[in-house]
Image (tube, rainbow, N blue to C red; front, side, top):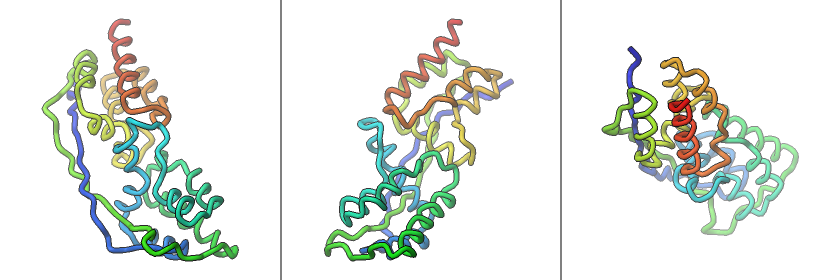
Length: 214
């Protein structure tokens, strides 16, 4: 018998690392040195904190390069990286590192920012907590999905990629174990980065309910 789907939620505790950067060279050294949780924080925090307000979350590195240092071309290169589609944070770190190394090797500007506008490297500790909800079938799954928090939806749809190391999500993994390959593939094909979390919730619920009624 297939195990029910256990819903989880998560909370982040932000840490100051005591490492700052005032120019692209120091940003490069910081990116090389910080723990992977810092790379995660500066590229994914907007997804959880603001994704329900805006479907286009920025990353902190691009913002600082463009808005503080006014290095628009370099910042746009950072912004163009599809950070949330990386399943491995070390691969993402390498991409940032390569961009900065290439920029500096070609004589790019390495001017300091104004005092007080340094880039402060932060990290986060993630605490995963079980919720009192377990779905044993599609009907229960849809009903629970209507009432769980945005944090739970984020955890299972976005953070799952980092935990599983594959371009998939917890919901689809469970559905496949139930033999619901078609529904699982439909959810996997969704592009959750181009919609708000609430829109994503409604779309998944509608897909599950349509399957129940079919």
